[in-house]
Length: 158
Image (cartoon, rainbow, N blue to C red; front, top):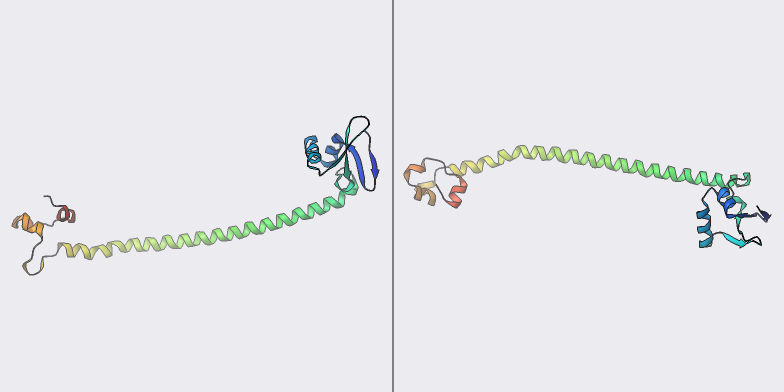
């Protein structure tokens, strides 16, 4: 293994770079392909990459970089928790509104029979001043004493 250091940069093989960065060799090759890692073809035919020492997870010098990463992750967790709490509060408000609307709907549903009752009485009421409905005229005097349903009045039939 041929490694060299100059100005905070470490020259390592792809395998060693993967181990030092904690990723797979395929990930290192992809970084080389994207140009995010510099590479060099050695005299022995091997491909070497240059790592910044702050990226090296196997060295204590990179502890400061890890501390920054951990702090960044803690901030993200804090932010996500606050978003989660906001969403929970919004859900509680929505549930409260739904419960109130359900109660209001139930109260209105109880009033429906009250509102329908007067219309049924007016349908069954005696015709005013001797007038009769066309159904009653057709049915004769025998059915005038019986109550005729609305659909029979509308569509006819006996």
